[in-house]
Length: 254
Image (cartoon, rainbow, N blue to C red; front, side):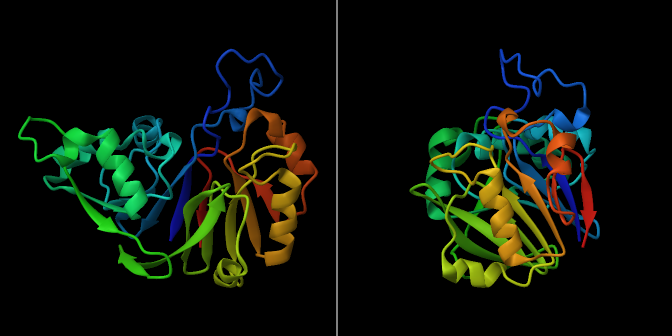
């Protein structure tokens, strides 16, 4: 299984519009962050987790010619806004796209992209088949077993995933003991870390580090970072050796 970080930034991306801070003005490519999403590749099959506003740009950058399915974590715009661009794969693959989402996310997709789900015969609308995710119930994609489980993003349930030895958690600031049991034993963990200061719905850098130490993976990476976290290279120097900030385009094999 290969994991490619399509984007590692928070909802406004980095640089942020109009900002003159040292991170937003940095010339280091690792300080340029599109909205958070990953590509999972298994053999010749590709799966995307979340279609944010940068989905089209990310697919072009990684030259993704085929896409098996999209899996969604939650319904916030920075995770669903690019869904319309699955149309390209409808054309290329001559089939409807499989979308995996909880009922809450399905309702948001049907609201925001009503024209894709109202039996419209208008040419060119995205075509999709919805599959319902239920926390604690595994499903198979591209020969991989996805185990969805719940984490909390303030008061909003978000779906995280355990896929073999890999756990993926974005947009969270609380993980129950039941969900922690699912994460434990993962060799690779990806977790959100928004910034250094406290936040109502995201883990801070220190909170995320503490969680990584609790889970003790072989390797941990942080995503969903804002410009307030600091420069990539400077922050990495402050982290334990097995924990790093992810960056756009980073590829891992597990």
